[in-house]
Image 1 (cartoon, one colour):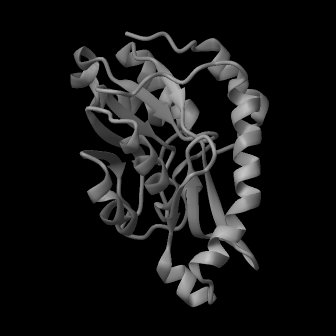
Image 2: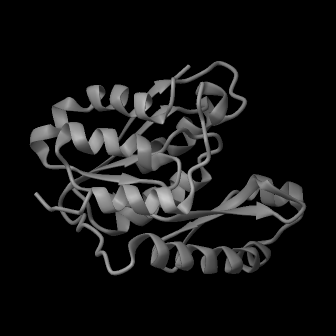
Amino acid sequence: MFADRTEAGRLLAQRLLSMQNQHPVVLALPRGGLPVAVEIAKTLKAPLDIILVRKIGVPWHRELAVGAIAGPDGQDIVINHTVAAVAGLSDNDVERLAEPEREELRRRQSLYLGGRAHVSLVGKPVILVDDGIATGATAKAALQAIRRANPKRIILAVPVASTDALEELQPFADKIICLEVPAVFYAVGAHYRAFPQLEDSEVIDILAAHPPATN
């Protein structure tokens, strides 16, 4: 049980200290992953950036992910074919459901970043951070989008995740660091004493306080 995202980030940062001299880039999955990533970026003295991902929910159960999109225009798509089959959705159906999520992704891109440029990932170690992983759909989409940017290697760092999600994500990251893997996983928030939802304004403030200095 973590006190909050800040504590989780500090604990993760201690596990990543060996990377400080490798000049990594820390990428957060907003909104919840950003407070975790901030602590890692501060400890490693690394540039902080975000990668935007949107979950594609089943129409009658929006919290159940049938896929996810990532990239500036949502061009990287991951489909959970098991969920799609149970829901009776074809790949074309999922593509159709992704369109409104692409609009929201573009909105957040403009709102969060404005004119701020992304940090280059080419040839650099990248640490992808979230506050926890339940199914892995959004993390997989992010990892695939990052891989297209030609980084040196990708480390996925999370405080807590389900066993199934970690197994699913293993082929997409060069290394995974996870502090807690519960035998029974209910929800990410169940592993934090304080787990408030971040507002868009908080994301903007955090990014403004951590300009994307390159190393």
